[in-house]
Length: 532
Image (cartoon, rainbow, N blue to C red; front, side):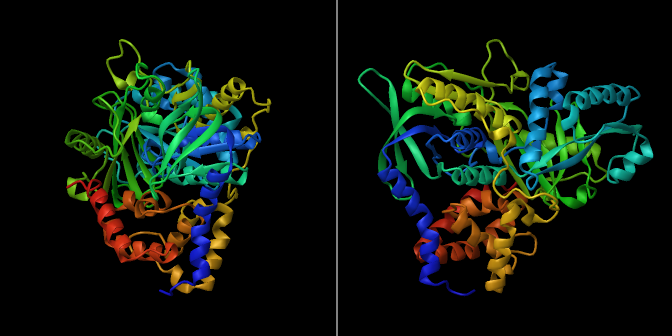
């Protein structure tokens, strides 16, 4: 591969230096948002779109936590309908339609089939999914309908045929979660906001009366600490909101009841069609999905209550066994542990409720509070409703801070890269209108058009793009969040780690020691994604 000129190296480095210059020169922000996941980025885009001076700080990388470990669905939530939470389903179905309209390069229609093996299942689920259609209204993705046995097997040829009576088909949304997070960060920047990754908030700044007026933040890449002032601070840290709440008040009651869910990634041959399978009732009462995604099959999810969150949750043996067993019940070819290409765990930020004995029964509604010290905390929710959560939070934060009133603009705001008509089977479609710039890079340097590995869709150009244009600064940033190499095939991601680190080192003007450190750190992480 060609060595880049010094000018190109500076082009890569200037993005972060510009960001740091703004942090060092700007005095007081209207809003500082802590957290670079779905909720924080939703707040950041909303605040910037209204013209507020908004700064977002993420301790690690954008979508580092739960927001990159979802089932990759933009959906109303069929199981919430079963629980009778019609209001949540209606809000989510509305937001699903809004997101498809605002980001058609990232969200697309996915067909799901509920296979029926008992006489009562087709009419029962058929009626429920007709209600799902009705609640979606004009923003629906397609009408559900009952399928015959032959039609069901035609759509899902590897479905277990024994005792199969037929199925019900319905439609929901699918997306790439961490790519949407990067798109939101770029949208926030387009609107004049400042999203910063690898910048951890270590303390809240208070005046003599105990009112919060900013944060202390440490740059994990340079070690430098900054004191940053703001008229209001928003705590949007997902499963870690309680940590920030305790920075404000050491006696603050816990808001979050964390629940872990894992996903298995299998080869596409286990379910070669384009239709997903939805299992409405498992042994633990949860819904699970077998979903085609990026040329693989995603199987999930579990529900295990945790004592507390951690930054790198790991799958438990019983979770892996549970999903393998359930997938085997519905597929003609039973997946084995050795078939798992990757397994990843995420933690749901469920709102704690007195007397709740199962996390699967806890609400996915969001919860908004303002402390006596003025900390605005947004907790709970899910990816599908991120925009509405951002709107509600910014409304309250602006009112509390006495900022000029500006109406929300995000319901009809095209996200960065907006482009219609792209084929989601083309992995470059997630870049939207930026695709042409990536292709131009390849035309100038054909070496960039080479794939990173024959088992993955990603190109060398995407590594360069991630560094220059998407704030990627570590090997994990590229292989976990800018591309999805780690999730698609953990073993292969370990193989390509050194090549990717060398490309990044050229862009960032780093030495061999940096390469060795990055490769070692990433491979240690990737081993936790292997099923053993």
